[in-house]
Length: 231
Image 1 (tube, rainbow, N blue to C red):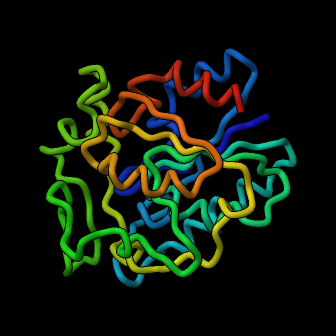
Image 2 (image 1 turned 45 degrees about the vertical axis):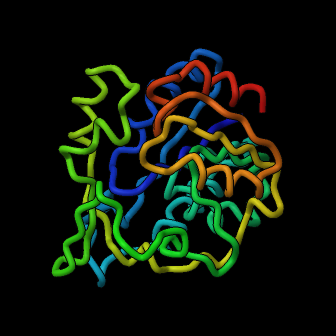
């Protein structure tokens, strides 16, 4: 078994966000990888409206999934659920989806379909550059309130500007409709409201709840490891 972790919006270096859980999995002989998402500028500048968007993110994740025939669990976090919905479709090695505080779209839906038409208060949007990002001063209290102080400090160095076009680009597939899936509801999440998570969770095969914030793989890595091993 291996684990492929698809990170959320407005961050870079997915392996850092995943590292606490990845280390525990490695001790159990389970390798993991975190693909770089082009829309977050991980393969070059995000490029705004003319740069890489959701299709490029999907292609990047599909390349990683196709590169190994090992039975795979894909962990999709937040925006990563949008990417994974299409990227994991039709990949024979993918055996299970773990959706962590994740958006879970139907075919034809985009990230913007799940908002109220106005940007979240913790986001900073630059229309001229065509990018958006998390306001650094709101990062810890919104997304990392249950994490160690060291993690909160380090996380600020792993934020990224992302192409705003990903918010309106629809997915062309919904892998969760054809694969076993587990939705991890983070009940103390201040970024993705638990109410919205529960709506998505109804689309998954199984539902698990943890009293954590937005990043349980950083705040409760052993719990996430145990859940993955059980899959």
